[in-house]
Image (cartoon, rainbow, N blue to C red; front, top):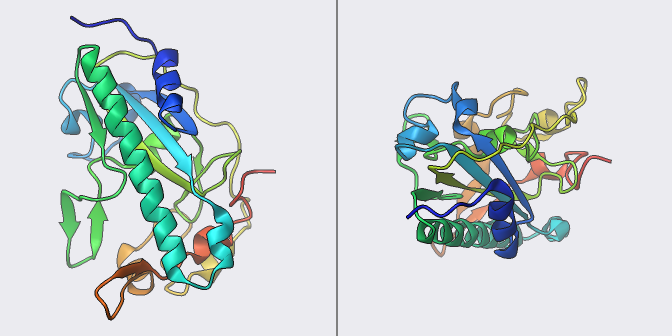
Length: 229
């Protein structure tokens, strides 16, 4: 039996699970999603997308070690995945259907020639549709209070939920080129990112077989890294 639950109750549950931000986008807002990556391609019957976010500490930029930044990214992803997993489980127990979307891996789609991976749903674009922020020229989501130090997750649900209004604040100034100019791979054009170029300097394997994110310049240099003042 499907038990009644509204958008505000879902947000309260997400917050109780540890989400710092939660917004909702009706599925109609995803009309422009690429074929294969629409919410209904991931879950048939999806009616709403619940987006959550947590912040990871900016103190990692004070360390010269790539391991510190990489650890923060991985732990934030674990936290978000736990939130979406448990939220989906709670909604499942109330009846209906829900699917938690991974915040990072695994990828269903990978183009080896372009070194381009794509999640089953673009979380950054979904977050924009759910009112959590705006996209910066560095292709990172920027929230007015929490900046760009965010990890995102999503739960697809088969319920019609009240959507949140898109963010009405601006992020990047028209003449700002901070992230474009600092990128050592010149991977940014102000709208998109070349994953091949980015991965050439960002993702590194250590001699011991570990993995680190060796570059975070576009995130760090952003004047709205800690929020929009």
